Image (spheres, rainbow, N blue to C red):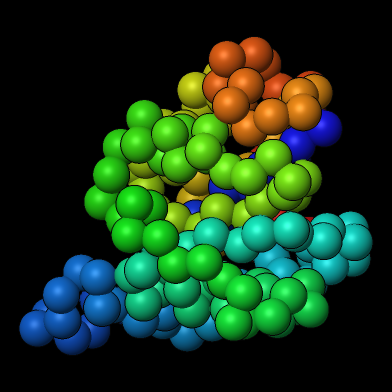
Length: 162
């Protein structure tokens, strides 16, 4: 079994119009929501073998906050340029190239590509709000099979849920 968590970065700030998109930080809501998501995952005893993050400031901050709640070392977060400003096909390529030794992977990135990929994997998922978590479990031994068969399980959660 392979478990993939697609996590959209927490809410970001638009306060500084001079910042490049890649450099936008989290806003107050994002700083509040990301720990909630991490705590929910921790309560469910999620133990990632790998945390992948877009290099964008808001995505990496989200990844670091969630990783801390999961007792995953910050230094082990893999920042991958292929997760920023790409399409769903490119994300799927990254996933299919993952080491099969990893059973549970968290991928933190952006919309619209995360929603697009989540929808492709499960038609019931049509939108990932900020800091949403789409969890997919695949009955496969290799990441190369992801996206070819339907997931055995697909769940969508977001910080606004209790």
